[in-house]
Amino acid sequence: MNIMQFTDYIDVCSHLHVNKKQGKLAPHKAIMLLSVIDLVEEKIIQSNVIQIDDRLKEQFRSNWDKFVGDSSIFDCQFSNTFAHLSSDPLWKLNPLDVSCLPKEFSIGKLRECYSSAEIDQALYEFMLDKNHRANLRSVLIGTYICQLFVESR
Image 1: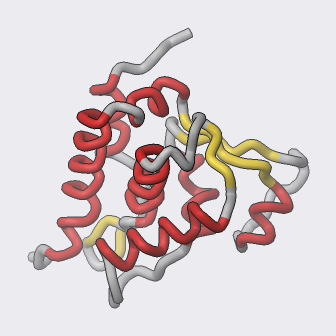
Image 2: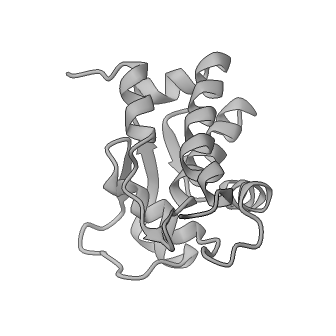
């Protein structure tokens, strides 16, 4: 078993597979990961299994409002983000039915097709540590949020 080091997670978090629009990196995956970090810190998420629930959806919306606000470029999209984070190596969807592969995602379709998502156990354990959470937040905000407010040249 190959266990990633914390620096590997920092690298993955700074190179998420995201869309680009008007020269800006989409912040959705960063907002989802920030939301998971927040809920781990609050002890609402108590394992590496991430439930598709209203609390995560509310935290995602709260973080979107806090960090992105009323963007003219990007829309707040919880369901798509939850599903599409699986294109990165730290997030895996747990299907209820392997034949259920929706092309478009709604919260209902997510719950119909997936029981949850999982992050690596090692990443979850790093998120339990205050300093590691701060480092992860810094990378996510610095890479995907701050760039939204810098003029493209």
